[in-house]
Length: 178
Length: 285
Image (cartoon, rainbow over all chains, first blue to last red; front, top):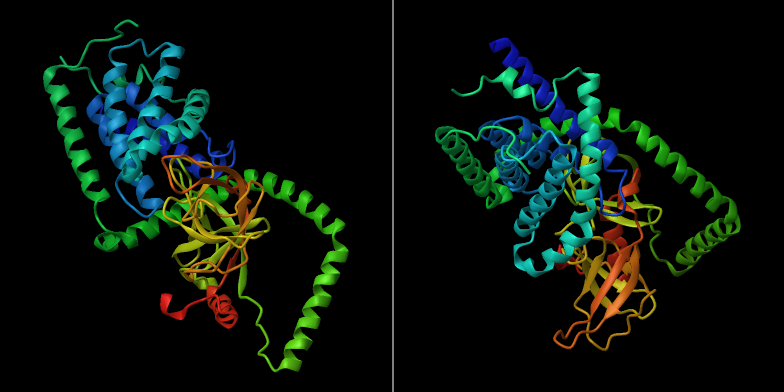
């Protein structure tokens, strides 16, 4: 069982790292102005809907911290917003039919909007009134793109690397609480 | 929507809440730290960035190749249509050299410039930082200017051995001193959340002569960017009763999402030239 858990964690790390590498190399170029898909956030949503809230929160924090450390001047902003959204998505996904494609799309869409709201508030605290236009001009488009691209990424990567689906994975890696 | 599985037990719910509070507290603390306080992180950051550059450099080559081919086609057509212009420029350069000799003025040195390839882009929402494959080993230093054939791109904000980080002018803390080419009005352009795809022009008087279509170039004031680099075009001028300052939108000439190659220029030589022309105040630096 322990070996399986380690392998699952390694696969999940690879899944997130690949999303990061694609985001920094290819996805950045495939954009419409400032509107681009956020593959990292999309991959994190898939981790959050398949894992427990504790696991998802820590994963969100680590992914955000990795982003903060590799680019940008300040540290903590991505870690803050990503651990918060991972926690909320993981809890929310336990109350909905996450197996449904439309539910996943809705989760992805709303996650990007919420993430950007938190991100912009901390990025530009002196001009909170300007955040509404930023959400409309950047986040709405990005949320739609992310909701369309992320399921494809999840599907392709799971097919290529023969990973287990997001729903059945938890029951294999971590035994359900009694 | 229906409930798809059992809700977590109270103990696991509180466990995740505790983890959330700890993670939020840690990241909140990091947000408010000054860059000097996290200086000890520079070594692990350099290691992480090297890994990212190595990975993205390999994975992103297909995309970059496609974009380079596209740019090459447009540049070829531009060069093919403007050979006379290039000849004229060379003639003017020679003439300028001769005139400076006659007047006894010092000759202007060529700028130290280096071509660099964009090998990574910030993964955050705005993507206003890029990594280029030239670093301190090639002579790049912090503060160098990054340009493209279209105009000003940004400045080098961090340098490692074999790569550097360029902060774009579309970054939230990269104001640029500019001048409207037609009317000579001086101002500052910077990114704001209200105009995420453009730059906002600030410090402009209400009756200033700025119109849509005006070309905006860097003014060189402040000593960060040299004078005369193309920045963007005014797309909208709006006056509101409750605001004294007009709202002016500037669209950058450079398409930052299609950035593949940049020209890195050492600012020292530019500053010497600006000093000669009286545009740069040495006490600012």
